[in-house]
Amino acid sequence: MTPKDATPPRSLTGCILTETGWIKGTLHCGDRITAIEGQAVETPTAPYILPGFVDLHVHGGGGHDMMTGDTAIRGAALLHARHGTTSMLPTSVTAPKADLTAFLEAVAACMERPAPTGARILGAHLEGPFINPEKLGAQPPHATPPDPDQLRAWAAIAPVLAMTFAPEMDPDQALEDAMRSLDIRAQMGHSLCDYATARGALARGCGVTHMFNAMSPLSHRDNGLAGAALAHAANAEIIPDLIHVEPGAILAARRAIPNLYGVTDATAGAGMPDGPYRLGAHAVIKARGAMRLADGTLAGSALTMDVALRNLVGLGLPLAEAARRLSTLPADWLGRADIGRLAPGAHADVLQFDAGLALTDVSIGGTPCPPR
Image (tube, rainbow, N blue to C red):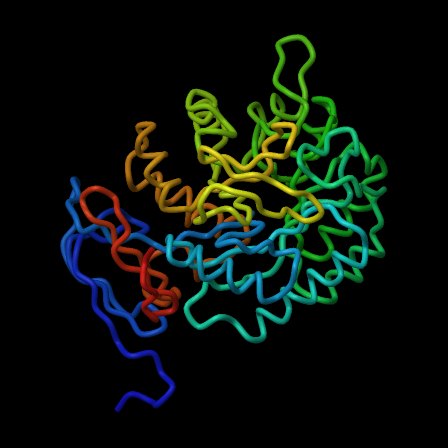
């Protein structure tokens, strides 16, 4: 007999992307995957059964800006779940101390009382405030010098699993040391650091936030963070909306960075019509698929992960690779073996796509969530 509160068993049949390749057969699950049965195939056919997407950089969606509280975080988690995101890190913008404290309190509240069919909240990504004030991009103007004690206080409110910082603002590496002691994934971004500084941070295990955007560029005579990442990074985010980064640059980063993974960097306009929205203290406009400040600066994205999958496949990536760069690799960056993959014992976060790569079925922990 199934316990009253247990997730009812489900079975999905199709071509299943496992850690060892495609299997044509059936996936069985409750809240966890219990078995995968079938035969290995070289060339998959629809329906394609893929692991749920893991988005480690997302500010909002469905009209909701996550800086405005737990209701907004839950609303954005519902929107992104309908587009295949099954786990996420709500991401802050650079903001005053009190606002970041309130944001983390909202993340903690969502983890305690999650939306039943929303993306799983794993913890938080702090994008700032310890970034370079001369490389804000669309971040509000609240950058501050690194404060390891403040970071420790924030991490006591909610799990901070990733943090974007500018290494040149942390010359004694006190912030980096604090992140390491708190098991926070340090990611360089909104930075004007030189090649040597970036290379040193990469050697210490740092990752990279939204590759190519808001960082010192690649140059053949005056190299910066982007060039160091291409030469030395093992892990980096990239925004595959084909607006933040043009196709050739995405392919160059894919060739150079083994664990390059996709994020949406989505803001409130994701899944919504054109018009005005919020990004922290900023007013932003959605138009022609992009989110921008009034001066034209890109301000996050309107991307969802199902579109990211189609974009990567459209660039020539095999479906299996594209899916893993949106699921398994970001999960691996967090050290999570229970999400982002289809394997017995993992959370039953399962997506089904048709032959045109339209999303037709979403399960989060075995619970169906109607796709968009």
